Length: 224
Image (cartoon, rainbow, N blue to C red; front, side, top):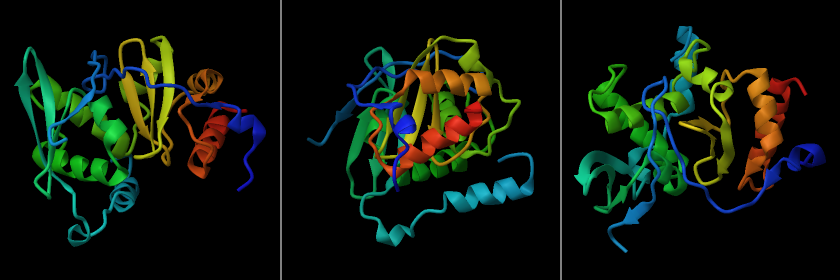
């Protein structure tokens, strides 16, 4: 596909920035983090059906390193995430943002399924569980216009807009929160918010078809 010069001009490669995130779908502060390698649905039934179909994974028998469990435990004075895989390996992450840098889309899908099997739509009691549950639901559940999270981009200062090619997720980092979104799904961000994001440029975006389509989608949503 020939890239639109005006759209691809919005892509810029730079180093990584720390990531923050909200807790529930309202205003909650997040934590910065790095990963530590220990071994080295909507408004209608149609929307719900489409959401389930869109994240239908490859059969487990074809996977050699699938995410099979997770837990949260105390490390020093903070809580961390431990991700366990089918081959016996596990990794500890200081934040959900650190996971995004390392995960594939299949990893995210499996983690979403595990978290939803445990909590469903019931809000978790503990803070770190709520952050993980909220971040995953924001990405995978059919988005609702009335969710408070979509009003945050015009209420808080926008810090950066970043794309992660490995899991095809882009995230909008705000002054006190971060919104994680799948690159192939449209979310109810306002026209004004989309215009500001396009002016900020998409960081770490490679000049591929996914980024091109993402930028074109935002241009349309911004009325450009």
